[in-house]
Image (tube, rainbow, N blue to C red; front, top):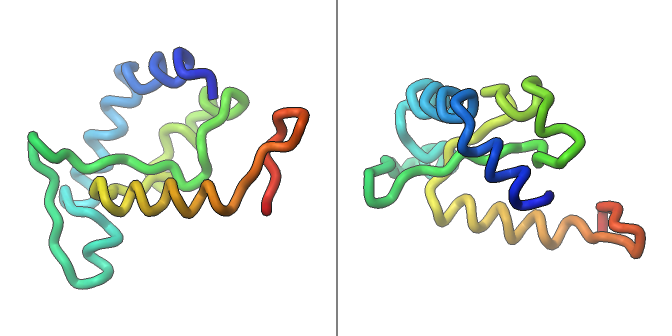
Length: 103
């Protein structure tokens, strides 16, 4: 995704409001750690990160059903979010035309 496009979205009032709602709805804890029986709470120094289950693209970033839908978001600690990024990189590749395809 074009970085400036993403920066505009993540600095928007709508995203900030959505992220606050996500933190409140999920109790301010990493969802994946909680499923493992661990309580990892975000702090000012180490905030939790919002992860889009359906990744944002230039084509869907303006679709609130994807970009701002709490059902499409997970609240994750930095470690869990990095694990997800690494897993996603292994799952997808970009072909010679710039299209994302499954591996």
